[in-house]
Length: 573
Ligand SMILES: [Zn+2]
Image 1 (cartoon, helix red, strand yellow):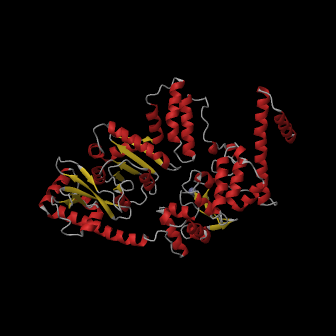
Image 2 (cartoon, rainbow, N blue to C red; image 1 turned 90 degrees about the vertical axis):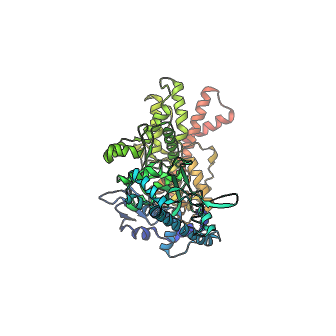
Image 3 (tube, protein in one colour; image 1 turned 135 degrees about the horizontal axis):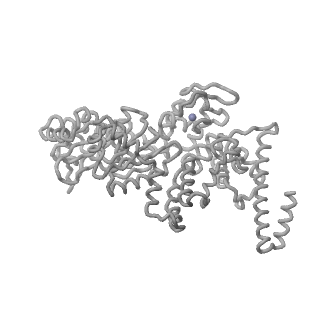
C-alpha cells in the first residue's frame, strides 16, 4: 500500500510539518532549555521524561525509550498503520496525499459497492437464521453449544439455507462473485455457503469483509471460509478482532485461539479478548496488527501433537515481530481439551489462571529446541547453538534480542564459557554508557550519530577519505548504511533520514543514535565531529599495529610491513 504514496511527498511532509505542533495537539508540551517536555504518553510516570526536539524533528522518552519522528508518533499514539499515519499527518498540515496509481480512486469506489454487498448479505444471513425453519435448526445447534442469543447477536451469526440461488435471486451476481459468496461449477454459479451456520468476518473498521461457514451435520468440509477477494485476505485478518476492539480498544492482552467456536465460547463466559486466525497459520502480519492494540499476545493451542506443532510455528512466526516491550506467551491446553470445554469445566477464574501460567516465549523456545539435546557434550551444545541462532537472529535489534543471545550463551556453555558474543551493536556496558539507549558510545557510533543528526556533515566526512573497506570496527556496517542513505536521498533533516530507515535492519540503532545528546563545546559541531573521526583513525591504527605485532612474532614481517610498523609505533608515542 505504501508504494502508492510518492517517497518525495513523505519527505516533504516531514520537512513541512513541525513535530512540536503535532505532538502538542495531542499531548501538551512545555519548553525547557532547547527541547519541549511532557509526561510520556507511552508509559505512566509522574515527572516528564518525554522530550521533543524541534531541531531534530524527533521525540524521545528517557523513561521507556520510545522514539520516532512525526509519522512514528502518530502510528504509536493513534494506533495507525503507516499509510493512515501519513494521511493523518497530511490532514494536519492541510494538504492532500497524492497517489502514484491513477486507478486508485476508481478502485476505492468499486470496493465500496463490494463492502455494501457484503454487509447486505450478512444481514440476509442473520434474517435466515431467525426466520426460516432451517435457521431454527441452527439456532438449536447454537443453544446446544451453550451460546446465548446475546453472543449470537454480538457476532451477527447467521444461516445460509440449503438453497442454490438464495443470494443470486436477490443481489447483483457480479458483485456476489467479487465478494466470494458464490461458487461456480460447469459455468453455473451457486451459493457457496448454503446449508451452513455463518460467521461474518469483519475488519478492524467493523466492515464485513468475508464469511466463515460451518455445517451442522457430519458432511465435509466442516468449515469453509471466503476465498481471497479484493477486500479479504486470510493472512491479514483475524476473526473476532472487530468485536474485541468494540469492547476494549486497548486490551491488556489478546488471546489467539484456533477457531470461530473458541472465540464465541470464550465470549459467552465474558472472556472477550480472543481472536482466531482464519484457517491459516498465524503470520507476521497478524502479529503486527495485534501488537498495535496490545503489548501481550497469548497463543492458545490444544495440547496434542498437532497443537504443539502449531505452537512451534507460532513461535517461529513471532520472532520478527518481537520488538522491545512486546510479549508473546504460549499456552498449551491439556490433551483433549479446547478453550470451550476448559472454560466450561474450570470457569473463568480457572481459565484465566491457566493464561497466567502460560510459558514465556523464551522459555518455550529453549525447552523446545533443547528437548532432545545432550547438554553434557560439546556436540549437544553446539547443536543447540546451531538450532537456536537462526531464530534469534530474526528478532529485531534491541534488549530482548540481546538477552536471548545471552540466554543461549548460558544454556549452551553451562554458565562461564563465553562461546558466543552478543551482537556487536548492542554490547552496551553500563559503565561507559554515554547517552542512553543501552548502546556503548564507540567512536564509530559517535560519528554515525553526528551524521544522523547533521546530514550535511557527510561532506566533511568524505573529505577525510577514510577507507571503509579496511575498517573492521563494530558499527561500520551502520556507518556505511547511513552514508549511502544520505548520498541517495539527500535528507533535509534527521526526521527524513529516520523515515528512510523505517522497517530496515538498522532502524533501531539509527533511532537510538539520533536521540543521543552531545555537549558541543565552543568550537562547534564540525570540530567535535572531526575529533570523533580522529578517534576512529586511532582505533584503526591500533588494530593494524596489533595485527603486525602478532604477525612479527609468528612469521616475521616483510620490508614494507616493517616500515609500516615503525610508522605506527612512532605515531603512538
Ligand atoms: Zn516513555
